Image 1 (cartoon, rainbow, N blue to C red):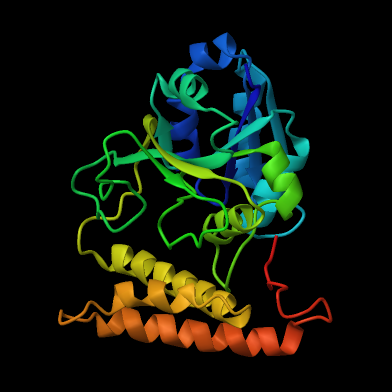
Image 2 (cartoon, one colour):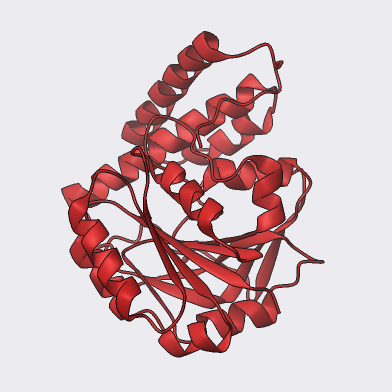
Length: 295
């Protein structure tokens, strides 16, 4: 059985983090010998206090650290360095693992068939906006494979419930961010695919996402706009290394003969232009296939 490390990075949301930890299934952590890695994105004393207090009373191994600089992907890489598991599970501080999460994941995870992927994300509150991290769009009954060397579409792998074999992250440089805003999933999954690893979208291991942004609210729109920034930056990165699939993916924002969300499209194009300008300034002699990513 693979040893599992669950990694949660958090920044300035101590109440949400405390609730997520309160709901963490204790017995499965003990049954499967799993460890919990908690990393605060510095500086954040309140979050550190919540993490330290939980670690003191937990009956299973808990490691706590504060990252030396801000950044979600960076904090998760700090957690990766501290962890001992062969299988790394990443979730958020506003997500609740289902009681059967570990049992289902370990029963279904087959490293011979796939080496990274994600499980289900359900809305904890049906009044929350479904545009924010969830898998309600999944139409397949059981599992969908992401073939190696394929281009991972935005939203296909979501950081609220993603998993990677340690060897995958070691081969690809760890958790990576694309663009100027906090993110951890899209480029990390693309680099895994580009390195020849197979991914899977897996029904069964489920988390409940309690993001608290109601349908159609300004807060939800802000997150949707952030997603558009990430997508635009990602498309630019792909185009810059000659992956024409970037333009095929972009077609999802421009449905043939349908209504176009001009607000979303403008954000994506502006983010793409900004990313290209950044690449022109920072690209190293490593060659045209060298992606500009932050870890």
